[in-house]
Amino acid sequence: MYNKESMANMQQRVDQYISQFKEGYFSPLTMMTRFTEEIGELAREVNHLYGEKPKKNTEKDNSIEAELGDLLFVMICFANSQGISLDEAFDRTMNKIETRDKNRWTRKNSQEDQNE
Image 1 (tube, rainbow, N blue to C red):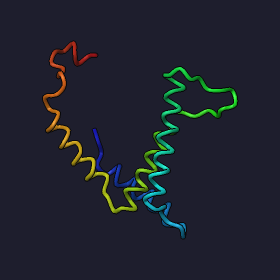
Image 2: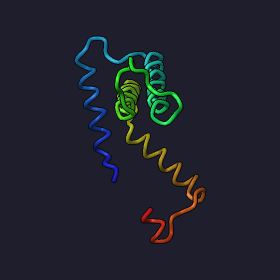
Image 3: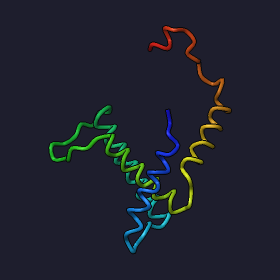
Image 4: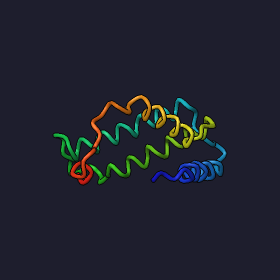
């Protein structure tokens, strides 16, 4: 189950790290650029793993997990710089999705469905 404290702790940990440097957080435009760059790196990893473009021998080893971690870091930096609680943002989004999409998908009802 989702632990609300974990996201707040991550935001605090990132803030403590960034706060030790005079430069502080990047500007919103720079963070969007970094986020876009990380999305591209994630897309490249997914393409290498599931697509038709294998890695070249000269390309460094990387993983989807590492790229998701990079994305999470940049997202937390962006949220922190804007004073946004990701716990609250996530709760609002889940409430919206759970309300809007509650009848959109086929629910698992049988024991067989739940074991899949």
